[in-house]
Length: 262
Length: 251
Image (cartoon, rainbow over all chains, first blue to last red; front, side, top):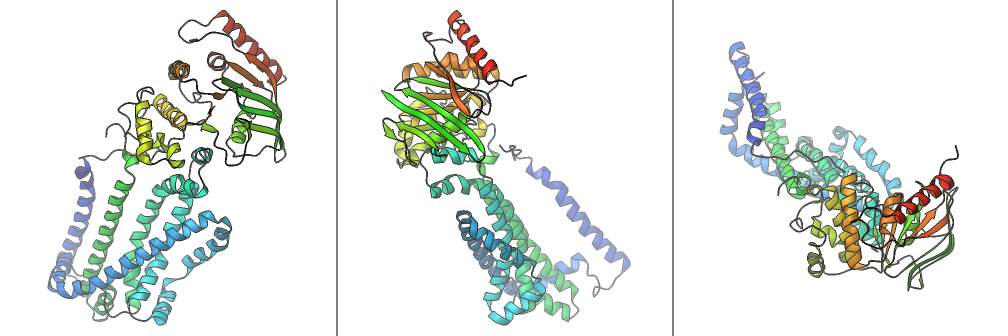
């Protein structure tokens, strides 16, 4: 039995206000500090300068955002498919679960700094190593969420289905999979926030284009304003993907918000 | 005609003897209750019937045919309503039919006419969390009935309800049962409920369970509309006495 979530309503705007205010005032403080202290833009550029550089370099930035977005989306789709297929296999074969789970855990202990150059070495400078790295970083939270989610199924519901003559497959589809959905979305939200960062890191290690390359070049030519411009884009991408999953969750888990009226 | 026949059924789970020697039968259109102390193995009997467990000894037949693993004789209603929170009431109710392979459209066509009798009209497209406890229980019962099995197994269906709702539900259930005559096996530890609803009552001992009494309830129906009759009172007292002296803790 879950606790019904508070229903969202038109009050959403007012509830978002504190968040907007805190972000805006943080940037305002930063701007004021840079203006008053007269600190060199080579050390700390003001937000206004970062914004200005984003506009000036919009074509370069856009050209380099596309490959990053591609790596993120392809990598994440692959990650999602792998996590789902594996989770189903592990759910039906507990022995496989005991055999493979340690490997997945180990895969999460590998330092990206060491693995990323190797993956680039093996798979070249194209999209493939980025996709693989995004997958490596993001599949685990989703896999764990799904596997735990299947196990959260109410045993009485399973017993009921058995009593109706349902096969293991039917029990999975009708009870275990839907039971796992709230868990899955929790894992999805965690994973998606890693995805863009992983893609940028993979590019940083070796790529022809991408936000990672923008950051690398800007750093090497002492342009912190351009580094930050790329960072802003990366944040916006992550926020957009996060919002998309939140939206998807609201549609898929409508039943959790249902309370009182319809 | 006998729908369910259990002969000398015994079951051991790990180190515990759960059922020692259970023999009982239920006839077509009969309402039979199993009464017993908590942990006596009442629900275990249901798990044998639904195929979740296999008996070690004895024989169980349904309509004369020995029970197999993929039995299709019983519609089971678990202790909690076990409604799926992600399905609307209509889809919850037709679940059994859909598992049987009935197309969704036909399953709905069979379910919808029954919503009125079960007091669920207007709630077909609500989610279970939007319903009261009594309504959820009625939805679970409708799901059970709709499966069209020869017999239904009810595991303390009113146990989780508050006292007032429980009484309303029992009364409603009696009137539904009177017109439909579902062959029913009810598990309960509520003596009054057993006496009010049943044709016959089996009393189980503590673990390892045996049948220590079989009592027929001759009181005419409806039993909920009038004050409890003297017969029923005497029967309740008799059953309580059996439960307290023969199954209670020896102090």
